Length: 211
Image (cartoon, rainbow, N blue to C red; front, top):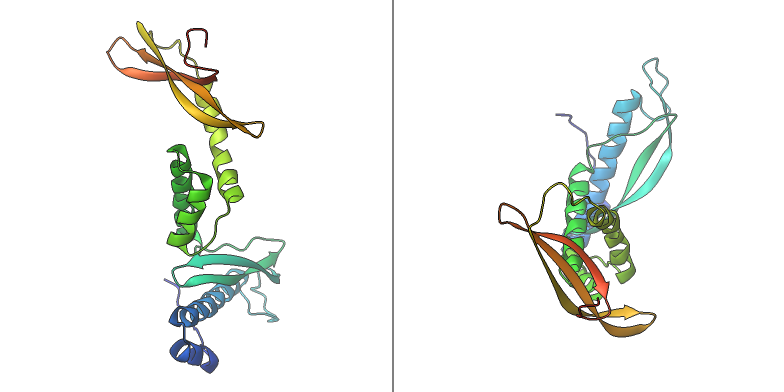
């Protein structure tokens, strides 16, 4: 495990112990420490300190770019190093990316289960301390479209279905700036083993034989 030498200035310590909001002080301290870790990792990968002349140097720094990270003590801004002609790699964001992916999947599941995008935005703001707009939630849920399309177009001739049941669920949907009732038609097949499987879904005008 790599060891890094971290320095903390007196101003940060003063803010940590005397700030009215302790979380603010901890966030600033965390931001400082992680930025120092990123710079130390860049030095390891390049084999040289900034402006150091050495035969072991593997590349050159090319500034930094900001990367916001939402933590339990607030949102911090990290300065991620750029490497000229190469790519800076770090494991620092791996756990964050897994948590972020879990959050995105949870947002999608809420929408699939009928929670409105407005309510999802309110819930995430209360739980995470950061705001997700309705449009952001909608954009995230667009990732479901390819999965739904693939499922809807899958072949059904692999297994026979001796029995097919068709039912409908009346829903309120918004079409052309109007809210109207539509029938969500559901086809359910019973295979030769006696198990039911949803064959497909489509919207109809009503729960009628014609639809």
